Length: 317
Ligand SMILES: Cc1cc2nc3c(=O)[nH]c(=O)nc-3n(C[C@H](O)[C@H](O)[C@H](O)COP(=O)(O)OP(=O)(O)OC[C@H]3O[C@@H](n4cnc5c(N)ncnc54)[C@H](O)[C@@H]3O)c2cc1C
Image (cartoon, rainbow, N blue to C red; front, side, top):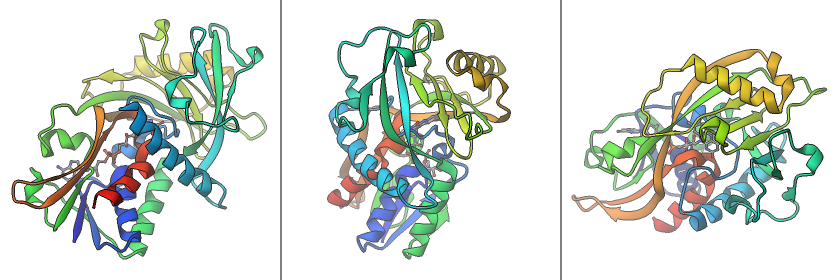
């Protein structure tokens, strides 16, 4: 039996690919959706705060293929969006995250599309995922394929049952795998009601500017909600919402999309991105000799990298 530890997007996609390939697999996790970090994401398929770049680009390409095929199906919890990526200063080169997008998915923004204060921009066509319903559908697919999901918490990897372990514990790997390279990058989110179809909200992201102290600003209009952000504070474990930051997110996003000024709030929260300078996706052995595959440390890109990493897990088993 293969035990996947972790039931966020990384554990679920890994477990599903294993099960589909005929492996007996179960998921054991301390928290299940809707209570994981994966539930809190903006969930745009675009790399942010993750490395190394080359591996991330190939994982992201695989995921993009999966999500865009799903987006074409009726009732999918994924939509393709044209996202405006704003640059505070003129960009000499295409940012590294866009280098594998073909011309059908990438163009330079017209000057008329740029809000005041932005010198440059690109428009990328990428999938945007409704994380809550999507995670529920992954659980249903895994159970329907004969998988088992149970709640369980472990102090160390050796305590987990199974012939082979897949460690998909995100930030939990700091303790579970004794890996001090894993650390949180906190992010505030303000979720508001989706705009009416007659006045759609522009999807945009700006990774940071001088006036935001390096914080990213974004609006991801999903059918179920419009997700506004954000912040990215390295080493911050604090999960209590700061009203001043929520106010600043509203102000920053309204400056770019004025219609958001009146958008009704649904919820506000803080999520902790499981950051590691490089994603750890590799096979090893536990001290008791059992094989383990580590798949954690996806930072602000877990949704973007998930299907690509799950495909690589299959090659390592
Ligand atoms: C504000 C914010 C915005 C984001 N926006 C995006 C975005 O636009 N695009 C994108 O691609 N990504 C985004 N992300 C990043 C993305 O959410 C994460 O990279 C992703 O959720 C990581 O998935 P995971 O499955 O590794 O971790 P998690 O979802 O945290 O799941 C970890 C699992 O491991 C379990 N676990 C941990 N420790 C133990 C233990 N000791 N014993 C048993 N179980 C354990 C947990 O209970 C949980 O089930 C965002 C994140 C945040 C916070």
